[in-house]
Image (tube, rainbow over the protein chains, first blue to last red):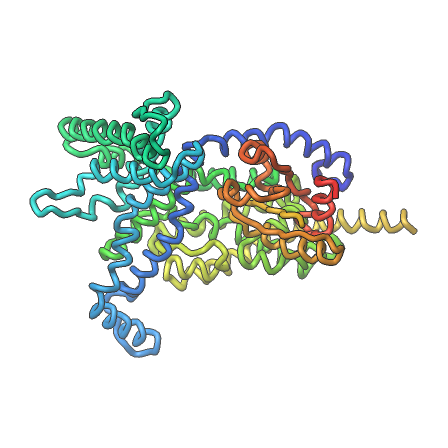
Length: 444
Length: 100
């Protein structure tokens, strides 16, 4: 077997040194890419908003199959819920429309705020400036009725919102950097001067983007945000394809193999895509349309390695003898149920451990492919509800899809993962037991 | 009284360690307030810290966080101590770094 897994500290240290020199800088580069980081952190702020929108929508549109008739308690409950929801739809749908329905408004604010923070600029001013520009070019304003149509502020325009959030803050940043502002006499108090410093870049952005939007509409027939959507839409579909998600998962598992937060690394690319897909799915759900995206929300974690870590834990609990694995299981069990796997990752460790890396890779491919193919065939529901990431796997699968069949799949995959992991983890356990007995002999 | 602040991706797994560290600090009579937060909020919560500790899974952020909090001690937590949720070992790391 690879020397990476040998218990000898010196070899382990050498490997660690190599990886600190090679993999860690990659992580550093990604994390310091300020635009990607602003988008990722902006998406993180969206989580509570999407959770509220999802549950409001669910409450208003119960997951009852068409043509459902009463008979058992469950069906009766769904029918009663449906009747209640229909009677109160006008109230129940408001939180949905004010969250997912206008998600681009929140996205432009979140992204602009995060980028402003990176530049150590005023968060609120930049956020408002970006929001203003976005609303001006969103084509949401109907001048005849003097109203804003929220259909222009939904999931489809998220990518335009991200772009405007970044560009507006960047313009403000450049203005500050090159000292382009209204010079007021020193006798003017700073609190009075502050709004004027915001004014020049804000005016520049509003005028500039409005003109750009007019030009864009004249040439393409649609505004900037629609154009950005047209450009990004194929990318969204391509990233959500099976091979692409499997590649993402392999990269994620590999980062974790080096002890680096894999999800955090890939989320600079995936979080805008899965958030947009989730919002689009939710829009389709409330409009009674088929859900368009499989790669949505937390699907690649729920039907990815979260199952495998739990499977490894079960193998350790029931089949392993080494005191190291037993003591790890003690601290790792409860967190693992809530999808916090760091104790296993650093305690077993799965870091630089080929005995865990190989089954984690195999299982991540099996788990996601199985779900993907079944969801693609219309047998399983797709993710349209966001939940806090600590909601245990099977419950999260069910609540995110409202399809009880996903719970069945979860446990089937768990059993498969246990079988895949068993020989690897047993072999690892054996090397640990051997090392432990050798050490005891040495001590005795 | 030392103010120890831990960061990881979501502040979840480090919060597990906080309890263990607090126990270890109390047992040793080492006065410390310990808290965990998401690394995205390092700017806000790192300001008042005596020492900032990063979960090993986000140690690639070390340079950036050190830049953000230039006058603070910023260290990554030892992987094994982290995995075993060994509060004593991490408190020992803190003491050594701060010279307590």
